[in-house]
Length: 332
Image (cartoon, rainbow, N blue to C red):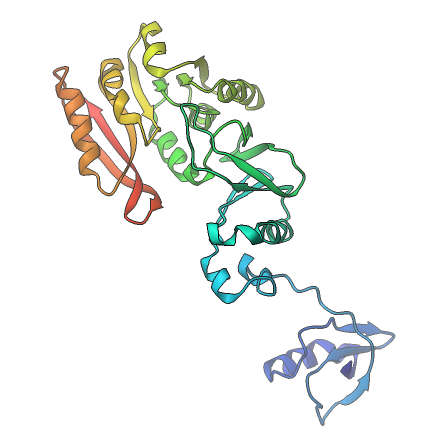
């Protein structure tokens, strides 16, 4: 390898000068030996002593997932590959387009190398069924679907094959937590493994009733309650929120309804369980806020109540033109 040989005391100044003039070869490591430094170069440099010496190649780290795949996939295939993926603890879940399924192993191995996470899975279906899970296929790393995800200081244990969890709602969960007042009584009607209850109860002295129909989700929520140091209290129930609510003998200052595909079918339950001036954090899939606001108003007016809309926001995009939207309504 062609190198500029300079005394060690001149090494850094020479390196900077060669870099500024585009003469340094960035593919190899600079070598220091005895009293001299050896800087790899692309072309002869007249003012320096040039020697031929063996240097160690630099391990080049890809800047993105697509770059790592450029030698395996065509440019068109890379364009079609959705390079965004969900990282849950030390697990990565990929979404690979149908026309790249024959390259799924190559893509999975690349994700394993690039992310340095323990396990790589691929989505095989949309979230489905009453217990809200999706089919996953193991691709690379260790075939272990249990992990602990960390969010805002909370530890959330889960099995990605048995429960649904979205790390992309972390900002939304923090926003709701920050809006909670000390002493609130809260109902989470579709709690999953408990990200909303855990994040809230870590920071606020509240009483939370957490409900989910998925037995595995409640099992992991009970574990997560033990894993975290909580200021508030969380009581868990496994079952359908409509049926389980018949057991509740109290009203709530806040009800969280994060089941965007079906939450509207439970609004009648929520408006009956909400305390006067209580807040409903309502979520749905929609291309606007109007539908959700109308649904809240209709459910409230059916029992002689009114809704004051406090806030509306887009939580995340779900498909072109459709959003996971949030609507906060105060029920009077």
